[in-house]
Amino acid sequence: MSYKILYISLRRLIGERDVAGLRSRLLQHGPVLFAHALALGSPRVVADALSMLPISERITVLRHLPHPLRDAMKPLCIGGSQRLHLQPWSPSVLALRRA
Image 1 (cartoon, helix red, strand yellow):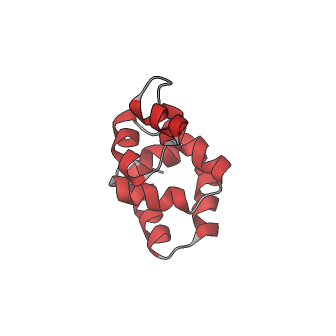
Image 2: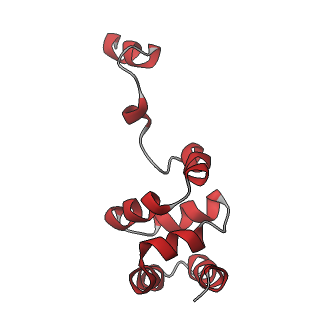
């Protein structure tokens, strides 16, 4: 199955909020093909799809998404916690320590 055909199928499942169908496609095609097909969509579409997956499957798919797409999803709070990216000397951490 090509990426484009799988992407169209994924968009339909996302629109229908069909969690079982989405997970079925992930298991059927594997996380690499699933992530490559999903990457054809906007960061919002990717975030919607990932929000419907259990955390373990979400992390697996995230690992296979292109880096620019993962970076574009950061404002949507997908792809990692800000706390994990704070440096111990940053003003944000120092403010948290004083609080």
